[in-house]
Length: 304
Image (tube, rainbow, N blue to C red; front, side):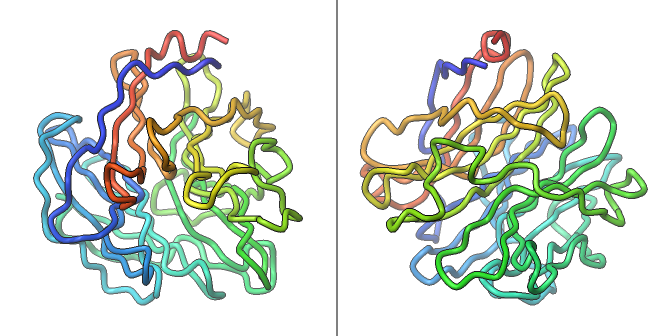
């Protein structure tokens, strides 16, 4: 897979009253586009659930009041949303730095008013999934999955890997069966190693996409093994013949135009074009996180 982005729109828009805008997740409901994400500040890790709409996928976007869900948690953020059969399904983290976190499930008919259902996945304290976060739903070959980040109990900087769950009923309502880890630190040579004294963070922000040729694209975030802090986060792609892997990384696919970094992103495939909605912070944004779009021709991207 050889990804060459032909255009880069950045920033996508400027939020009204927030320091940082992260975790973009665009969703089309058949009439308009919805953008969900995390709005807040990395200074205190305080977040609300961002919501905007647009008639066209590249805007202009109208920002709305944050989505408010009646759930508890200190890290309610990073929503993964899908629209199916007239219903929005949102999967959202509640914690990731603490045990007992949940991936909550909420539904909506319009993207504005939400009803919270029982949690989709709950962390297993003391296990390899002691902490869970960054959920994203995906349908691969007609089967409904959820990809997410998980990590064991930690006594240093968290070290998440990418995990997978499958719907036992092949419905977005679950229940969800854990499949297990599908990508480990050791599978990603351009990611910092666990034993590195300057280790920064683990693999996160996963998304699965079925490609037209039947292969599976894993879109995720890594941290480069070298460089200054604040310049090492990168979007990367990995490819597999099967949803459970093994995945072969094709490396970081988006280089910042200036000093900075990019990460947690969502791929949309439309009209033979691959569009990447990503978060980035650079000098031009005063190192505040903002959204951007990058595009490439899908035929050239999957030729390898």
